[in-house]
Length: 203
Image (cartoon, rainbow, N blue to C red; front, side):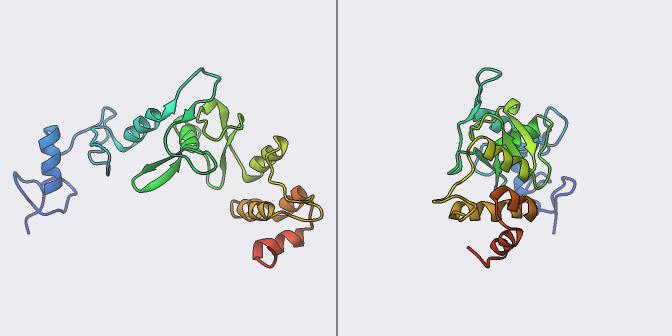
């Protein structure tokens, strides 16, 4: 079977030496392999979004800033696109949801390491101003919550009874890398209690 003439493309030939996809790209841009201003191959197809001559990175960067309400340098820059129930901005790219505040740090050349959070100094979830963000560990994030009075509290004091929100938070923080001993100290319970919660032996 005759193949597309574009290097690395194994699609079936359609016309003028090109497959259907590269034929359409050639028709729109005048070349089957358009290049972004940075020298990388363009992200010519972007799902439901319009085709772009930008590469994948700069296409995402452009979409990102189109959804940000940029204000004063020290003010919060709130995300105007989709948000989670907790207020954090999200953007869908290549079928994957990405957190806007994490992307903001990545675009600021401060990528968030695996199993870390993009933490806010402004206590404003929709904010994506990189000056208000820093990469932190799960424990950094938890300490920040407690210092700002955002730690979930149950019907009674945690030393005698953990609320459902506390239990859910303990499991979440442990899955993100927090140590059981640190969680026990933070919530004022015995480490074996934390261990039982994580294993599902307690609620």
